[in-house]
Image (cartoon, rainbow, N blue to C red; front, side, top):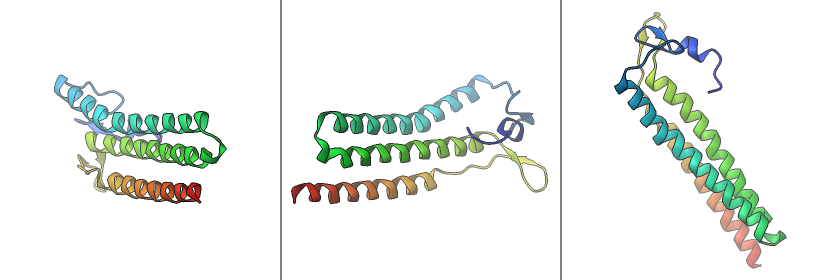
Length: 136
């Protein structure tokens, strides 16, 4: 999404990504991948933002840190979705390698899963600490 000249660099059947005409099957596959990966991350980020807004609006000032934590967690998920979109473009289209040949490189979403797992564990650990501070 934020790559420089991505439409020029990525290719499909030796056409630049900007000028390629996709078949029905390729278009279906691309839309399914976007709906599954990008949509899921964005929906999760929006739900975290919504929950943060509920906490900030309904509860008293002692809960503001919890609302801020969920907002930060939502931003982390949103940035992970941008990274996943970039990886998805690389997965569907091909880029020239060192020899100038265009080859598809399949890459799993393992890096994104590890980052999201670490982000989630950190957020929930911080949430437990904030709740313990409220109890005291």
